[in-house]
Amino acid sequence: MPTTWTRTPEEFHKIYTANTDAFYRLGGSAMAKELDEFMTKCALSLWSKGSGITQRHVDMANQIYSRSRPQPRWMLWSLTGSICEGEVFLPPVFYWNLAESDAKRGTEASRTFIRMLTNILLYLAAVDDDVSYEEAAFITECTDKLNAICDTSGVRKSKEPLNPLDFVTSSEQSFIEKHKLQTQTTGGEAPAAGEEQKQEEKPDFDELMAQLEALVGLEEVKRDIKNLMNLMKVRRLREQNDLPVPPMSLHMVFMGNPGTGKTTVARILSGLYAAIGVLEKGQLVEVDRSGLVAGYVGQTALKTQEVIKKALGGVLFIDEAYSLSSGGENDFGREAIETILKAMEDHRKELIVIVAGYTGPMEKFLGSNPGLESRFNKYFFFPDYNGEQLMEIFRGQCRKNGYRLTEESEKAAVEMFAGLYENRGDNFGNGRDVRNCFEDMVVRQSNRVAQMENPGKEDLMAVLPEDLEDKDEEEEKA
Image (tube, rainbow, N blue to C red; front, side, top):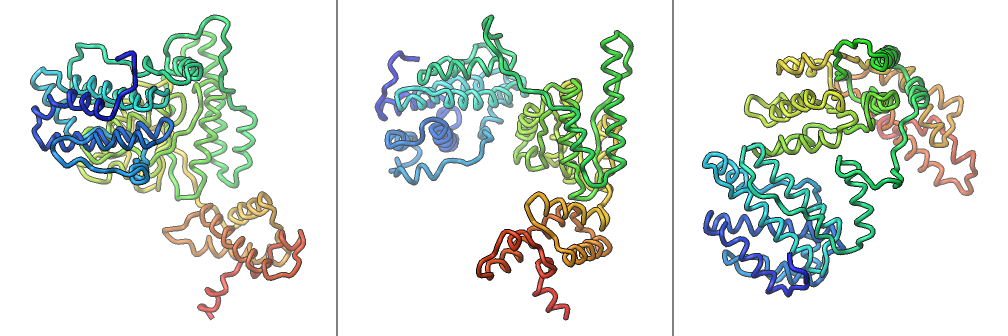
């Protein structure tokens, strides 16, 4: 990298052209167009990570277009509005083909592309005369994901790539502190002797158990979790006393309808495991199919690996997990399943996976892959809440938000939730339905109170029977 960072847009265009000419010759005009679109998107995302897009960036963007199309005339507002909101970096389609070709031929064009990309993005980051830590981190993220494709394809690696963090020139002190934090959390160099390290406090076991006990219903689930905690505590004690501990899978299946507390219990459980030392951090990473599956071959594995990386040291909670196996033999969801199974084996001591969903589809899901059923041997069933339990949840919502049920509205609410449970259908939402009822009540109560001339505190808190009834619905029934 040069020692002086100031460049005119024309000079940047020459650098860009010099680094991409080889790929234009390799792939022809079609690849040149795709490469231009890819680089423009990278530039927008890169600049948005720094101090924001300025007129200087606009001038630069007007240069980042090849001979394959007329040079545009972007305006500042239109360029700023073109920034991709997504945080996930998706490699261009041509790059997958390039890596596969390298693996077959023993060439290294895809690795060369990474070095070129790093160089170009570093120059683009320096458009405003320096490279910020945020910009360098974004470049690192991009190159890491491209390298992962090469690693998966088996492309050999002959040269050490540039480290974008070495080129940070702005806010040096801030960068040094962030870089120290990064090396502490990613297994890099240890901090110098005498430096204080801020460590996250472990969750409090008793507090989490109290939260579990305070949940409405779920008596069997609570009992099973208490038994599991006792088992894990004893296992830890046996390990500390050099006694044999039989192998044990901690991955779980949560089965039940929506709104029965599965996510809440998973969050408490992840904290409990951290509190007793089974997990390092105890964070809960919640995803569904859309958070794991991508639209192209090979991209699903990368997307899933990113989620797994965030979950290490904690719990990966996959809601409606059966959707990963419902698309047939050629569906990308199966690629996500294979990636997760491999991670469960590779990170046995630092990752717990909980799959959740409706009972019937979950049973089919576990039977869709031989590796799934063998790795999940703990099953928790979350039953529907009955009318009394739904009412208890509703009372809790009212207390928490400063609403007070009158004697008449209490009776009306009891009847309402008893009927809701007795007439429940396939789309019964349990706690979610209670939340919807509460929100509807708040709207009706607000409309009523707003018509009062001088409402007092008691008026603002009081919930009357008419606040629980949908007048339009009642009129339709009549």
